[in-house]
Amino acid sequence: MMRFLQRLGKSLMLPVACLPIGGILMGIGYWIDPSGWGANSLLALLLIKAGGILIDNMAILFALGVAVGMSKDQEGTSALAAIISWLTVQTMLGTAVVQLIIGADAVVDPAFAKINNQFIGILCGLIAAGCYNRFYKTKMPDFLSFFAGRRFVPIMTVVTTLIICIPLYFVWPVVYNFLVWVGESILSLGAVGAGIYGFLNRLLIPVGLHHALNSVFWFDVAGISDIGKFWGSVEGGVLGQTGMYQAGFFPVMMFGLPGAAFAMLHTAKPEKKKVAAGILMSAALCSFFTGVTEPLEFSFMFLAPGLYFAHALLTGISVALVAALPIRAGFQFSAGFVDWFLSFKAPFAQNPILLIPIGLAFFVIYYVVFRVLITKFNIQTPGREEDDSSAEMDIQLSNDDFTGMARIILEGVGGPENVTSVDNCITRLRLEVKDRLLVDEKKIKSAGVAGIVRPGKTSVQVVIGPKVQFVADEFKKMVK
Image 1 (cartoon, one colour):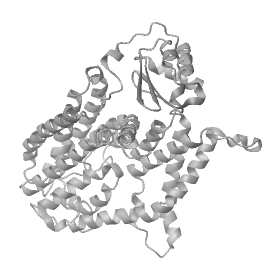
Image 2 (cartoon, helix red, strand yellow; image 1 turned 180 degrees about the vertical axis):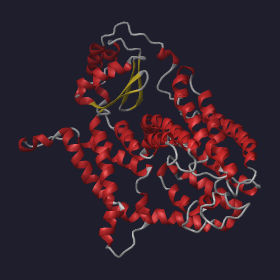
Image 3 (tube, helix red, strand yellow; image 1 turned 120 degrees about the vertical axis):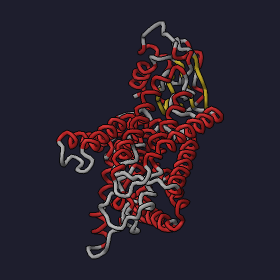
Image 4 (spheres, one colour; image 1 turned 90 degrees about the vertical axis):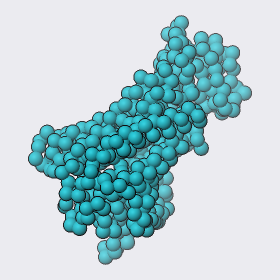
């Protein structure tokens, strides 16, 4: 299971790397025009819409990333299948079709308006990858040969997704509405309830169900409307109370998560720090400045679920602590620096400046907790993957005949018929084979590789060095 989660986490790294720039563009646009969100400034409008292209379509990016990353040879057909699966779910479980199913006079469950979330994106990516891995070599009779092989994958993806939509039609509303009920049940618990909400809010982000709780506390499902009341757009705000379900997120998003990012960077392997810094520091800036945390959270939530649980727990503590203090701040976009600065002018703001010392304390707490957990349990955060060593990064191939090297390695693993999966990391060609007894290590080493690792019965990792991508490309052509 852990291996599956780590592979899933790596598959999400490519789309996650695209998100920070989107969040920063939106934050700048929102700062330029905080009240109109582009209505009063053409530049703000362009920035907000440009950033929204990525942030608003995060679920689709996840579907594509998971489909390609989890497929056997990272072939583009799996990405096409992911889009098909996504469109199928959005159509069949969208409010328009559900309305036709239940009748024009019936009320569509609000859960179906939230079907376009990250969980569904990841699910569609897994469906597409599963169909690709199962059907990309399917053979057909001559009269159906056009639909054989990879062309058969989108067809089976549609069929599989339609089948999965049947239980989702019944299960999704139950889960969604259960969380709404949970949210309504903790309203009377004061600061403790706010902390429980903060904990569940983060814990549910990987499956996209945090929207259910947000609708209870931030909007009008239960009459709280914490965001609307805080900014004065909804009547009924109470000084000292309104904003308690928002203020505690600022220390986490502005300071806590950046502290976690620094801990992950400082514990990364020396040869991988530059790569890790590119992902972690841009995501940390995005979290601090705009409050868009997904680029940072998705960089480790599947690679290190234990760390993510600690993050959710610390978020709950922060929200509960701030709710118990005479501190109130709010946001219209998210709990980043932009909204914190603008919340000073809100009618129900209360001591928002005190969020800075609390945030600095949470920076230290996050840094220490993450660093201790990462080093004590050797958690595979970005830059700490065990696939490569510093010695492997220094390997220099004496002969850059990548085609010849790939041919010899393929012969050494028993030929294309014995290869079930081809992948590569920074220095290693990672293969899965049908019959491990057909693997001839002596033959593989004759290709001039630096070493061979056998982590599992059917797994073979060939240590090549930083130029492994060129060998992998040639190897994949030969396997096909």
